[in-house]
Every structure is written in C-alpha cells, then in structure tokens.
Amino acid sequence: MSTIHPTAVIEDGAKLGADVSVGAFAFVGRDVVLGDGVELRNHVSVAAHTTIGAKTVVSPFASIGGVPQSVHYKGEPGTISIGADCVIRENVTINFGSVGARETKIGDRCFLMTGVHVAHDCTLGNDVILANCATMGGHVSIGNNVFMGGLCALHQFVRIGDHAIVGGLCPVWRDIIPFGAIREGAEGLGGLNIIGMKRRGFSRPQIQSLRAAYRDLFFGPGYFVDRVEAVGERYAGDENVMHIVEFIRQRGKRRITVPRSAAEHHDDES
Image 1: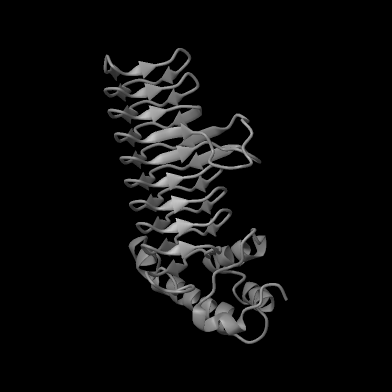
Image 2: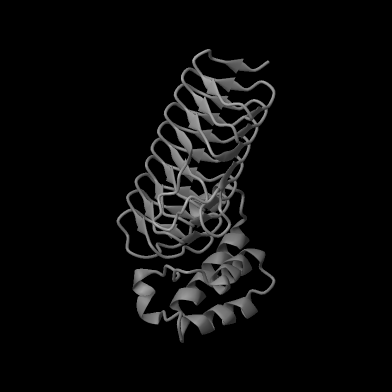
C-alpha cells in the first residue's frame, strides 16, 4: 500500500503506482507519474510533465520539474523522464525540456548527489554518477557509466561519451570521447579511464587496444580528421575503438577535448 503523509499535496490527475511513499510537505503536480515503489521524502517538489521510474528515491528539498533557465524559453510545455532505481539526493534541481525535443531524460540506476543541477533538455544514460554540485548547462548529453566529479561544470551542448570520467572542480566546454578522462587541475584530456574499465570487466587486450588507438588518434602525424579515418580503418573490428571513432564522426556543436601535449597535432576543422 502507498504511504502518503497528511501534509503532502497530491494534485488531482497525478498517477501513483503501488507502494509509493510521499513524505511530509511534499508536492506532486497533476501531470506527474510515479512508478511502483517510488519514495519522495519530506519537502520534495515534483511538477510539470514528469515521469519517475520504479523504486527511485528522492531526498528532501529536491526540485524536479522546474521551468527551464533559458532566455529562449517562451512558456512551451516540456517533459522530464527519470528511470528506475535512481537515487536523487538533497537539493538536486532538474528542469524540464524547452526547445527542440523538449525533454530532459535521465536513465536507470543514476546517482545524483547533493546539489546537482540538470538543466533543460539534458540527456543522461544509465548508471551515471554525478557527485556533489556537478552542474550542467542546457542540452548536455552524457552517456552510460559516466562519473562526474564534485563541483564540475559542463557547458551547454557538451557531449560526454560512455565510460568517461571527469574529476572534481573541472570545467568542461568541449566534448569528451568515450572512455576519456579529465583529471583535477588538468587542461585537456588526461588519458583513458583505465580504472573504470577494469572495474567494469574490460579485458587486458581490450584496454591495450584502446590505448594504442588513443595514441594513434592524438599523437600520430597529420591532421586530426585524417587520423580519425585512419584509426577507423585500422581498428574496424574493434567495437570499443569504433565507439570512439563514431562519437567523433557525429560532430556535435562543441569541438573534441584533446590532450594538452597533443594540441599542436590537432586541427578538427581541416
């Protein structure tokens, strides 16, 4: 049976699954859908067209469904989709989508620590961890199994590839390749997320192949665009390397983050 505190406000039209718990002074708007086993603790606010997946837990003073913080927003409706088994800690803010897809989307098993901000139209994959006060501008895209350190800040439209890691206090204004690592205090790409790959069961040959491809991409001769195609041909049978190649080929609105020591080798507009 669901447990609703008598001081909570549940607007008419909200849809609550089985075994939902809503704490004291929480607010659930009329267009909200809560999956089975969702737990909203005291003083949580969930508004707008928001869907929260099963067994997700939201901690006090989190605000989900806020209006986009964008000068381009003109009152259009938007949505938020949050997956199952997520943990959303205190004072997290998640804004609904505005222009374009008008959807902010968070995958399954994500962990958003205290003070995280997910802006309008952001997309997070599965198993993403955002440490305390990690902040995203609008339209940021984060892949699966990504870790973002505390107090890091992502520029709008940045893409972060699968299995990447960003250290605490790091500003990110360019795309980060899958498996890439940005380290605290470093300028530019700091190598590959080797520890993360080992923890997720990548084999030694897989890691060695990714290391070799990384060197070829960022430290080989010629223009970067030519090196990308050469790596694509050389490692055509390697799924992990090709994941990096395809990420680069997609060319988002931001340039690719490169190692500082390789900057003189890099020209992605040539």
